Image (cartoon, rainbow, N blue to C red; front, side, top):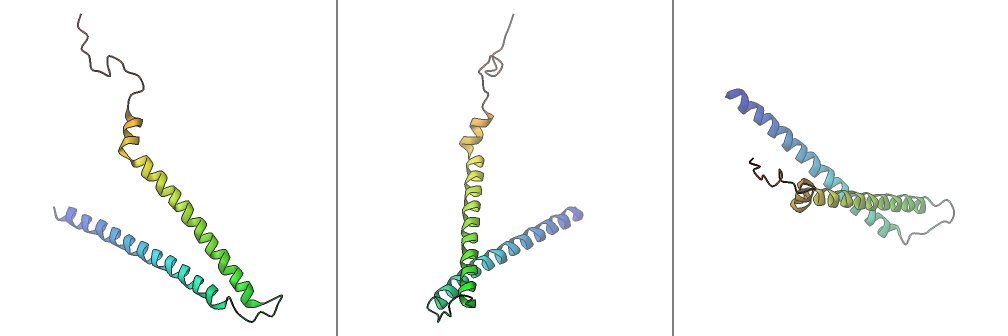
Length: 112
């Protein structure tokens, strides 16, 4: 009995650790979005020296980062929607439903 209780606690500890890592990852993702956007807004009206401007190159890289995050968000949203549809009870009932109605599927008793 004691061994089961300690095994359950270890599983909960791992679950909590994963949850904390997920929150840290989400916080870092949102922080990166805000800091990148703030940098672009702050440096949008800088004194550009023309070709080879370091700030313009950094803004271009930051915009590319934001575009990749948007693409990642769209892909994750699509995957979540597909998962939600596949897990929906109506979809599962349609998949589990027998394709043809037979006497056996209706559980009809066949007496001689």
